[in-house]
Length: 221
Ligand code: TMP
Image (cartoon, rainbow, N blue to C red):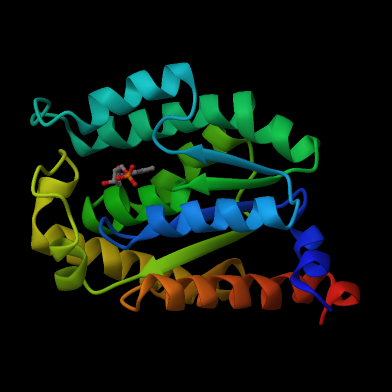
């Protein structure tokens, strides 16, 4: 069966693309967008923090290196505030219209950055997330996994506030992502993002096809 047929299984699904800074996630999002268009799959792409007028203002505060005094709790709540707006304004209506929703980062980022790396207990993050997203967790988190040395080499030397937190912080981010994927394998697709963009995209599409077959065996092929 052609990819056009199984891709319909992605309609009305909520995907989050996750990964450390420098994972190549943005390149893959561009490719996925072009692929979805070719498949005539309606796609709503949103990014975090941001994706709404309110959220983009919050993003500026979060990423501006001038706010070096920001506490990790404040940071976590600001990410969640942006997310709450995004959920009601963009994500829920798109899912209701049976589009595939792709969020460039979601709660998985908060668990990795403010949780595993920042030290906020996971249960606290989950409790706030429950309020922010009203129980609408992604159907699948795609983790673009890459070792920290490779990831850091890929970054623009003008680091934003989060990127500038140092190697140890970013190692804990990666470990946090991998631990969460291990804890909940059904909702994670882990991709080796140290490979070339073509190879990474191939892993992504193959992984999505296998995943879609798990809930929609009729479109397998
Ligand atoms: P971006 O570079 O992918 O646009 O992401 C913005 C930065 O914000 C990135 O360094 C990851 C970080 N981040 C968090 O620390 N917690 C979160 O909940 C989210 C969504 C992003």
